[in-house]
Amino acid sequence: MLFKIIFLFTCLFSLNPGFSQDQYPVCETKSDFEGLISLTLCPLNFDPRFKIPQDISMAIKNNGDPVFRNQLITRNYKESSDALNHYLGGNDDFPNWWSFGYNASKLAGNYIKSIGETLKLIREVQNGNLINIGKNLDKIEKIIKSSGLSLKDINLMRDSLAQKNSSLKIKDYLLQIESDLENLHLGLSLGNYQIFNEVGILISHFLEMAVKNENCIVNIQQLKSNDEWKRIDPHSFLRTALDKYQQARLTNDKETKKTLIHQANLLIGFQEQFMIQKKVFDKYNLVKTFRHLRSSIKDQIGSYDLVKDNWAEFPKRMGFVSKIDHTKFMSTKEFNKEFLNKDGDLNLTPDQVIELVERGFISEYIPGTIPAFFKERINRSKREREAYFN
Image 1 (cartoon, rainbow, N blue to C red):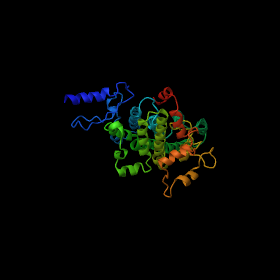
Image 2 (image 1 turned 120 degrees about the vertical axis):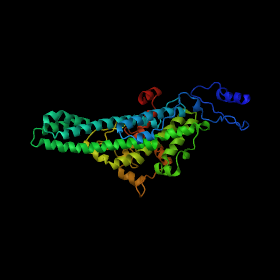
Image 3 (image 1 turned 90 degrees about the horizontal axis):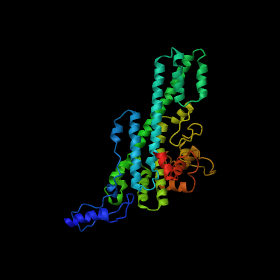
Image 4 (image 1 turned 180 degrees about the horizontal axis):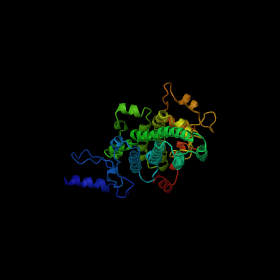
């Protein structure tokens, strides 16, 4: 017994006496010591900075308040980003998908809250039947401004006050805004929830399994049943991405690590955009909604106007360029013909996505696209990354 205890402490603390907090020793099991406490646990178990994010799936499922739900999701993304960073080595702090998810969810939360308040204000004005337009003018202007509409729209509304039946015109206008904002509010809330439910929560389960295994390596297929994987990850974008994170953990070469993390981020980005967001956009017809609002609502990238530049087109979001002219984006029609099957499903594998990036058919250098956004931020200095993601 004494020998076993000495062996245990030797493995944990003396196998590599020079390791720092960012260099974890890997202990091997010795089958000769039957009954000895397993020494194959992931070294992250002994890192005081490492904390597995909570599984909050039931908490958000049972909460109908989109603002509070978003706050839980955003906080979880931050915890997940930090935890995965420690898993990946903790030295370089290259942003992982959850780092981007944190910022995107935080911005989505701002819109969910402000649009919800705007809807409440619209209903207050409507309930007053607009009897006294003068008293409601400040509220009407606030509605227009918070909807992202232009100064021109506000002036048009002011001019309409001098016209006959102005109350009816304004009421019709508010009804249109209400309908559009309701769709946008529902779309943002549902997208925020579904992305977390299908992608965000994965890292908690992944890390829970990792700390139980030697060198923190997970059999990713065992995270979910075959049927569940088939449902949420038909193209294996998620599973391939998690495997690339594992490969990144195992390499000591900084550039290789960065490349693997970037590829993993992109693959999850494809899953998020094409398998979840597009369905939400289609369900609530958000492209039409953006045109109605004529607003400059932006996502986490913050550089593309969703209407003016037609950023809601998913080939453009993901940086697909025309095979005929690389200086132009691929049209939706061209994309559908090239990359959708006869059933309208995406016909791309993870390896094909990486190849398209390497050959320049998915551009990482056109500002405003998700690949360029990911690429630019993973190449920033550590100090710049810390300032952006905190």
